[in-house]
Image (cartoon, rainbow, N blue to C red; front, top):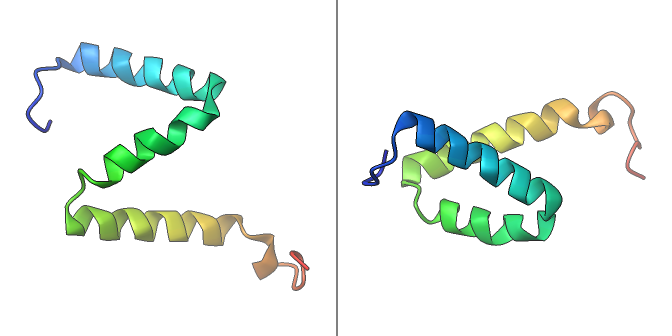
Length: 70
């Protein structure tokens, strides 16, 4: 944890509440992600970029069906 006093149980509840919140209000996700990004170290930024890129590649039908996005 990064300096807050959340217990594991309270952190889990806050996570559940946040997921429910952004599921019903997707427009709120942008500012939450923006705030999160600026808390990351350079190493964590790189890891996040690699994770996102790997998931996009796995889910991209273009790899299996050339011209899929055309």
